[in-house]
Amino acid sequence: MKIAVIDLGTNTFHLIIAENNGNRPEVVFKTNKPVKLGEDITKANLIIPAAFERGIACLKEFKAIADQFEVSQIKAVATSGVRSAQNGAEFVNEARIKAGIHIEIIDGEQEAAYIYEGVKWSGAIAGKSLVMDIGGGSTEFILCNNEEVIWKKSYNIGAARLMQRFFKSDPINEHDKQLILVHLADKLGELKAICQAHNPQTLIGSAGAFETFAGMIDPAIDIDQTATATISLEAYRKLANQLIGATHQERADMPGLIPLRVDMIVMACILTNYVIDELGIANLKLSTYDLKMGVLASLSNQ
Image 1 (cartoon, rainbow, N blue to C red):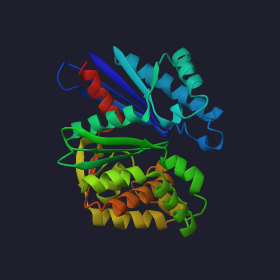
Image 2: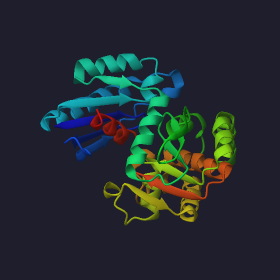
Image 3: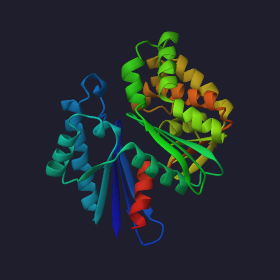
């Protein structure tokens, strides 16, 4: 039978459809849409009307695709953009009525648990590692090995939130960067403490910005056919400095950088740099398997 997972991210909605034959599910279709549900969400903590309509329209489209594939089960999960919005429940209700999609709003703990299962499935975890998933609304950290989660937490420091609050200059100036670093230091004390105790040497970036980093560093890599890859820390540093120092237009002209990430990639770089520097990370890896693959794994195990 065919099963589908819809991941309603703050920036992007994802759909994957898999054939579940009782063993390892095989993905037969996947797509995504840059819905930008979290557009201006920090101003009034609301999904604004234009974003609301984009979200519902996307879900209608995803439902039509699922019907074409004769999907027997759809699991739709919503993360930070919906769970933190005052009108998030209204969006869930409209999705059920207008698109026929029943959405489960998951908390940060469950989100991190799904991310771990997805990253574990990719084969990226070898020994003690810190998994980092930079979303639009939140960023999840999972301290783990390939057998268990040691610690996990979700923080409301996603790239879209940071951008809306702090990104006021072009290129971003030193004052704005320092405000972000102070904010991160204030929020991530528990992360620093747990990592000082366990000393993970490898940071695994879950999809999103880390796919962009890997693809810009090595344009020959086929992200769609890659489950996990090593990212040179030296090459990442060089790229991050280039992205942070560039103007919006200079980044827009860079090959391999999709329009949705032209500005948010700067926030992702600053956040990633902070984690690498503060925790003494020595190795950087990519897992293209993330939350949606973790949800898929959970469905196949039912």
